[in-house]
Length: 257
Ligand code: ATP
Ligand code: MG
Image 1 (cartoon, rainbow, N blue to C red):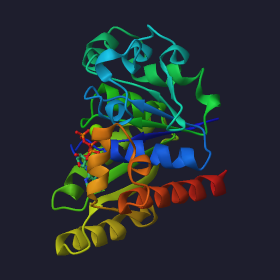
Image 2: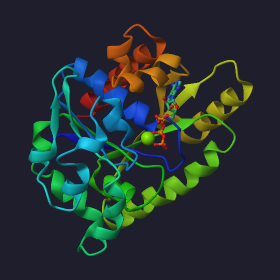
Image 3: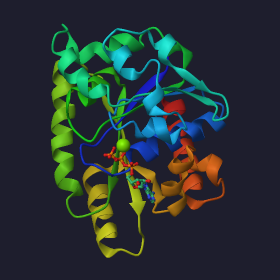
């Protein structure tokens, strides 16, 4: 059964999409069967994998609102070695549409039942908000991966996220775990980054992933070519860091299994 991991943080621009795309690509090169779901109306993960978000025939919106089956909307990306359930601005309507559904927070979970067995890992790239889309991802998920920048307000935002997680555990998904906190865009020369990183380790211990993603220009450039960094410049520090992260995620999960 594929493990579903929601990549979430309501703070914008912390590296959710970069992590979703590059971790997916890295696990795919390690021969894992991986599906990436774009659940953000911005459609950045979709574009970052070279899929035109404006020309989707079927999308995650339709799957979420039960207008399409996942099997009809998922696109195999042969050159990248993984599958994507693409998303776009249609997702903004999902919030309203879902209001009319019973079990509206379980829509994604139910929709994925039919395809879960086809994958080892399923990553859900969430929007920068704790809205119904993110809630759907967390209800569907086995765990949450939380990318964060080590800067001044990072810890403050984390407590809202932890409250939401706790709420979801109490109500619909008691098994929801924290996959890990991921330090992104890390600059080892910054004293503040180091201080925040130390605080994180102190508060969250083992929940902080050992792999640290450095700030690396190739990671920022790759999406404009519609490619994960691994396919754009495989020896870049960014690509190498995400390969290491994939290794860490596999070790943690395959040991636990
Ligand atoms: P949003 O909240 O808008 O969905 P996000 O959390 O998904 O944003 P990204 O889109 O992954 O964040 O990253 C924000 C910006 O920072 C992007 O321009 C991305 O290319 C860049 N970026 C992400 N990670 C790195 C990194 N490690 N080094 C350099 N640039 C990065
Ligand atoms: Mg994003």
